[in-house]
Length: 129
View 1 (tube, rainbow, N blue to C red):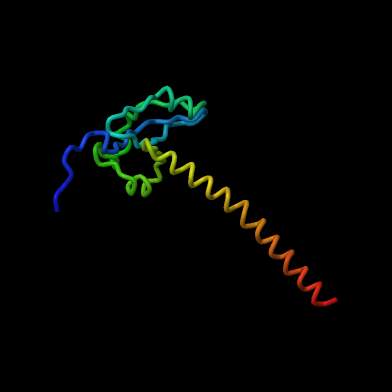
View 2: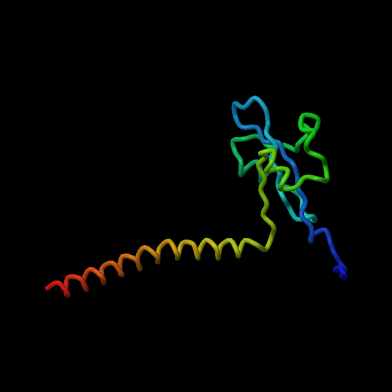
């Protein structure tokens, strides 16, 4: 089976580990951010999104020997209970469509159900009279 030629770093996903310290917390917790391989994490934007928490580059590798640079995947993070987030570019329209379909279903199904109940009730009342 032949592979694809012309791979670039934009075709890959890398996991960047950050430290997030909540106000009043004794220690920082790791947070893994999945980004396209050709992008960097903007700590100012992450910090603004997680405000009032303090965000910095993860340096506590010795405290977390289970985390190995270059080998951090979702299965390991789920097993360890480490938060992760990933937002590959170009997928957000799919997310919007999914939300729109879910909102439509949540709206249409109860309305249709109520209309059917009303129709059945009117049939029963007509048949009984």
